[in-house]
Image (cartoon, rainbow, N blue to C red; front, side, top):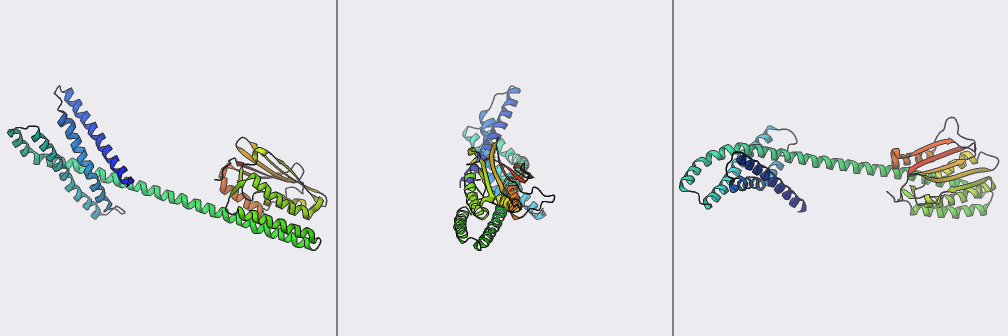
Length: 360
């Protein structure tokens, strides 16, 4: 109902604008010729002409809708032209009928009435030609507007579909990380069961806590950095139980970054990669450093180890590959993901993402 009222208002406003435009033109011509202004004829009749068209526009649109041009067919064109040949004279008859009645009320003489009756049929025929052009413009305008609406609808559907595909892909990438993390941790517990049952039991309890956190955030693509660090700390407790004094973790977290949104399950696969390929291969103590800082409107996260460093041919496993793919999906060209040589001789993973503090 609101859409119909809005469309009717637009039609009336367009008719009013055209009536004022042609009235102004007629007044200008009259004044330039030094003749007196007949306000009823030069203004009132213009409004009658265009308001009659405003009343006929819904009928024209209704006709055009019943002959949608999906393919250019002569049958459709001929039908539309036939209706135009009817509506053109119809508009003229209504307009001249109203104008004639007004002139009669104004006190038109018998001689003028007789003369008017003689010229009205010819005037209707002449004006019907220009009316056919106006009818054609209305029909073309309807088709153009209808095409625009359908184009926008297709565009919106394409964007919605693209968004759904992106969310599905993100969810799929994240769900691949869950069993990857779970299987690796269960394998660690399995090995530890042979050596230290108490420690293995403690790891199982901590793993259950992590799984609960994972389920709580199952539908979230982004969480705050603080939430991500809490999850990471639980994971590191499991790994430190396994490595004892061989694993040291240093954290340099800027408090101003704790409320920044980051991808859910971002840090754990990167730290796990540092432990598996950097720390576990060392005979002596290993060091992992986790840093975060703000640089203008960017969040910089760095994870480094003192392992064997960056090999010549880096093969990204599930953790690194999925993390990079998720960053690409979430941030596009607004992020960077780099594997660099660490100052300590190991591997440095640097992530730069735009800062925002609301989940999007």
